[in-house]
Length: 110
Image (cartoon, rainbow, N blue to C red; front, side, top):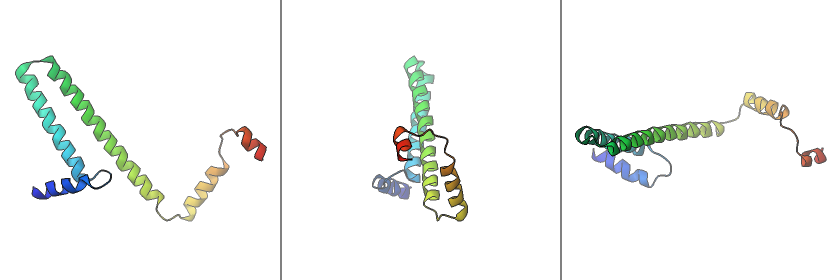
């Protein structure tokens, strides 16, 4: 358990997201939602119902955003990979077949 807190402390000084930071975020939101659900059941206060919904939506949005960051990291890793002939051919084909209309400056240059 102390290793988790050491990793969490180190993640503060590491740029980007780390698995320990993501895990701590999920634990925090789980504890928040459990607390809000208990308060909803014991008090029947509509404010706690709204707060539970807001916290759930925030947790879902944060989870989605972390997933998008992971996808971005994978794409960046692929772009930094060595270029093969097949990839070069695809890039050249795409450049030649752009369907975008030319601007006035591009027409003057041609």
